[in-house]
Image (cartoon, rainbow, N blue to C red; front, top):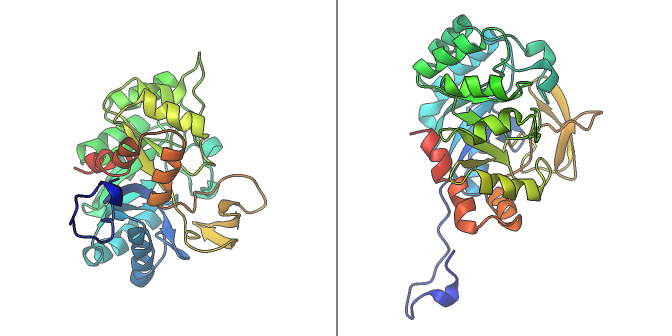
Length: 307
């Protein structure tokens, strides 16, 4: 960022331009979740993130039965023309591993299939831009191929997959890792898991939540070093974003926010974040990531996934 002291003499003064951030993974804000908010609620949540620098975002939906997701896609399809900057929808489920479901309702989870993929593609009528799938589930391979053929970005996430299984999904066309390190096996020195598979493939972009809670700053900085130009900052922001501590809803689950940290009520399981992209960039810089690199991770890198 250029400081006022570096401006030429006589240069016009004024506010620094708002950065054009792109958020691939965002669930809402100001008490509104994209799973069920009406047009005014969706607009209010989008405007909140826009005020913090996000020019473009995907509306992320948590897991729900396929028919319910299809209905919501129909509703959102009517809203999107009225929401500048909303590039489409990210389906975070329901094709997720039960043991790595995080804040997703276990009742809503189901195995993927080519038929289910086709149902959601048709219901979305072009607005489904990305989908998160656990590639070890029965039917995942066929579903991945169907989504990829339809131009949908497939992300590996909420998964128990080992390195080989995740690598096979990336080789079938998946090209995104949903919030690296979270809701998946860790990066072990003998078992590199999904993170290792993503690092080993140059076409894969790795999402990361830079809020100082989901990923330690040392690991965050290491990820940027290991995958230059392939890390995308995301907020994974839920409906409590922009509000204080309290009790909220995420899909069918109750969420408690304590000191801005959302967890499933009565547990320590993280339930998204209350992050905005400007804070994510600041956290990455604080972790030692060069500012230009952090800003690219919040703009040009994720934008490339939508091109």
